[in-house]
Amino acid sequence: MKYTFIAISLILTSLTACVGGESAPSTENTNHETSPTENVKEEGTTSEEDGVVEITIESNDQMKYNLSEIRAKAGSTVVLTLVNVGTMPKEAMGHNWTLLNAGVDHEEYASAAESAKDNDYQVIGRESDVIAHTAILGPGETETITFTAPAAGLYKYVCTFPAHYGTMNGTLIVE
Ligand SMILES: [Cu+2]
Image 1 (spheres, protein in one colour):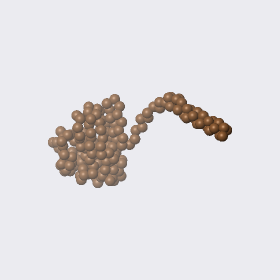
Image 2: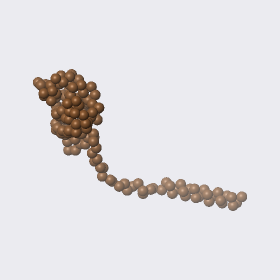
Image 3: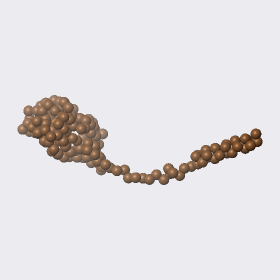
């Protein structure tokens, strides 16, 4: 009986020691290594530095952009690159990126632009409806345009190549 009591005491003592050891302040996590945040630029992502936002957007043979939404701060400089990753001929599957002013209906504008082939599918006389646009790009072509992000609000972008506006549109969110 006596030995049993001692044994139990020893067990309890060692258990207490263990618990105490575990709850002792750990120095492991006090010295966090500060690894520099890598600024990895990927296709279809945006990055912002010093009031400049760089955006790469792709268009493809499936009549799609890879981004349906992009963001910028009001007044920032937007450097936007459209990459046509498709392989179909420009005459059949050309694409542009056209940013419309607030309140301009992208379907209506793009419909009107369908007859403006000679003006790169931009409506003559409605230049004030457009904030910025690229040319119509053929397969493998790339164009970079630079513009100033307008006032905070929502702005539609659209491809004005005939019959593309239904699937090729998105929203620029200016904050
Ligand atoms: Cu298109």
